[in-house]
Structure formats: C-alpha cells, structure tokens
Length: 60
Length: 254
Image (cartoon, rainbow over all chains, first blue to last red; front, top):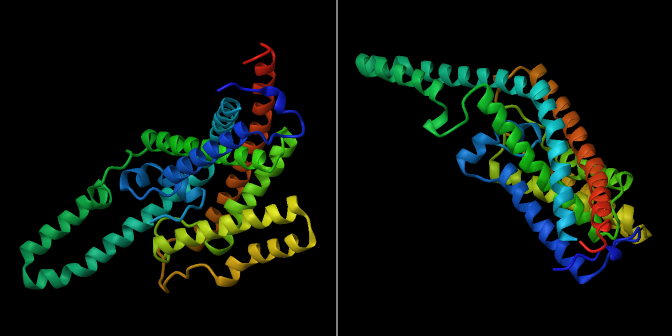
C-alpha cells in the first residue's frame, strides 16, 4: 500500500486507493457509532448511557 | 491516504470528544442524574402501591418484598453491570464520547472524500454543520432529546425512525448542496421533509415524573452540545488533514 500524496491536491481524489480508503473509513465509522450509540448489550448501554442521552440516540 | 484519513479522524475525534465531554459533564450530566432520582422515586412509589395488597395476604412476604425493592434501587436496574457513580461514570461517558466522535469524524472524512472535496478547516466545518443538521437536528425534531424516565415509544421503532431520518436528511443535503440541479434540489427537499410527514413514533400517553423544566432545559442543552461537538469534529478534521498532509509530503514519499 503506497500512499500517493500527489493525487490529493486541492481538487480531491478519485483514485482506486481513494475509494478503498473511503469504504474502509465509512465502515469503521459506522461500526464505532453503532458501538457508542446503538449496541443493545446492556453493559454497553449503561457505559454509554449519558452520551446516548445527550447526543439524542434513542435510549431505553 | 487511508493512514492520513484514519490519523486525521483520530485526532479530530479526540479533540471534539475532549470539548464535548467537558460540556456534557458541565451541562447535561447533572440533569440526567436529577431525572434518574425522579425515575427511581417513581419505581419506589409503584412498589409501595403494590405493597398493601401483598401485605393483606402475607405481611411477612410483603415486608421482605419491600426490603428487596429498596436493594434493587441501589444495585441498578436488573442487577446488570453499570459504571459506579461519580468518577467511573464520568470516565465511561468520556470514553463513549471519544468512540462516537472518532466514528463521526471517520464518516465525515469519508463523506468529504466521496464528494471529491479535499478537507480544509472551512470545508470540513461546513460538512460538520451538515452532519449536525442530519444526525442531530433532524432526528431531534421528531424525537426530542429525552431524559431518563420520560415516556417513549418502543426502542426499535425509534431507532429505525432515527436512522431513516438521518440517512434521508444527509442524502437530501447532498442533493441540494452538492448536486445543485433543479431536479435534485426538489428531490432533496422531498427527502428531508418525508420522514417528518411520515411522523416519528409517538410515545404512549402517560405522566412522566420528570418536571417539564428539566426536560426542556435538557433538550436545549443537548442540541447545543451536539452543535459544538459537530463543529469541533469538522474544524479539527480539516486542520488535522492538512497537518498530516504536510508531514507526509516532507519526507518525499511516506
């Protein structure tokens, strides 16, 4: 995996590598938000309780 | 590129989480704890209301039940694990905020690159504000931020409506602000309005023990915290993206 910085000027990127990075970041992001905001396990719910209420994730 | 994206999201998530955790502890946590006092009191009153009937049949059993209910209140709902009061609870709130913030920052970065917008602090701030509109403001119009103990519709239907509204609003904003053709603007408006026409799950009629002033204060503060949270994620992501870009460029090939 070579990081080609040149493709990332001010015009953005449309390279294959860019697409892979976008997909990986999006999936990882969805996973983390699910963990913090939606995971139904009661221990996770209780740990994240105040965050969920404040950020208005449906809770209880 | 993936390294740069992940690094920038980690840094942005951390900075936003520090600010948001501070705001949460200062503004909303005390309201949640105050509301929980009403919630447990309501549970105790319900237990007390049951008590005379049980007492009439078997006094000893009724007393035992009363004592048990009291233990129940201090041990937490159902005896499930929960962070201890005070510092552990604050620490877990901070940890959850960090995980959520990094997740949101990753989504923001992915959305910016997918739209072909190279992140600068200004552009990322604009995306952050769009994220606030889509993931905080739009769902809150139908499902206002709730304190513990408030009456609410079943959890799964609320989560489904929340996700649907967030996704539709994000898509609508994309069609309006980035595609900018007459037909996509029309479609975007339809997408943004449709979830609210369909209507959020309605809570059952019932009296909540939480005073209205607490609930109103909480809703306003919650949206305020969410606004700062998203603005910080955007600004910090744009800044960190530039910083990691410079660092990668300096040694010619990273």
